[in-house]
Image (cartoon, rainbow, N blue to C red):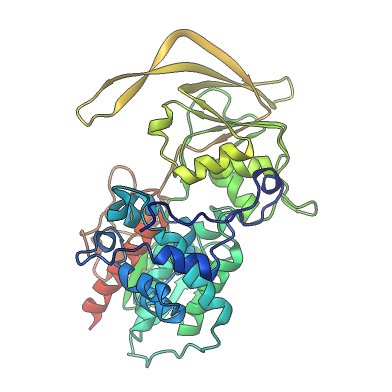
Length: 458
């Protein structure tokens, strides 16, 4: 068995930093088979235990090894509503691949790359039409069309439920369309996955804000929905709460990426243009920070900095995303913490004042807390600052749904494994419960809630 995985073909760094085309180009059939041949087909596959939606990973990889790509897709499709999405953006290194026994003495099997290959091959070649299941006579409303909502809708539709998804924005997909850039997740992939759900019979109502257009109570008492799933995500941005955050050129990463991804603000003919800054400071160290930094480069910035108060070891973004960002020219300014945004006499950003940090002794959990180094302030020249330090659940559902219990962070309180809220017939999952997390965890929550709703109604 080869200890190293098949490398993924990708655009050259100095080419891709000037376009929004997908960076990773995908495996060829030959590459996919060679990678699949590395799988040990463990009798007790830890990779499956590491997958939040429980895909039969050895099963689909064995089919890839045999060249039976459509059979591989059927195995994945039995458990996952969004295989082409998951193959691109799931943090496999900390989930299925992180459990792979091949990673002990070499590199783990490239499970995510194989999942992507299988899904893309199916969609490129399959002419099979989806036949909606026989209706079972029950109606369910799904609030939010992100990964949790779409997964819940798909699972219920396969069981014969009449499902309507209500989306606040003008386009379905939630964070998949407004949060993740085109170069990581092409929007045609998301649209294709959504069309599969529509073919199953799922109805999608856009421009509909539950809590404003309709309340949860109205959905259930007046519109005939017997159960409701809340998958509204975590779209409320957090800020640093430092002086100067109201200056022109300061964005939340949420707004910056939404305007680029959903509204195509990078185009010359955009009706909602975004500032094409020369020097950009992105505050934060997660995947969203990397997405914002890499997007700023593609808008033509000469210099883009990631300002993060801890070291490289604590950087929460996926290693692959960090490597891609650095290859493209993003500069990591680690162990630095912003304390003030400085502006010029016209109210535009001119610099970000930072203080240098050092890591203290480990706490009880083993994490080393950052602390300021005295007299170490400096000004980082920039004309735009993007705040990417996380998001919280939008309070709209809490404020408009009587009796819905939430925790101190605004997350909806649910029963573990079932997703049941404090209200009868109302379930929730994904970022609306956990706060900002991963696509696959949201999908797992949507899948669990769908099973619970099915038990509740049947």
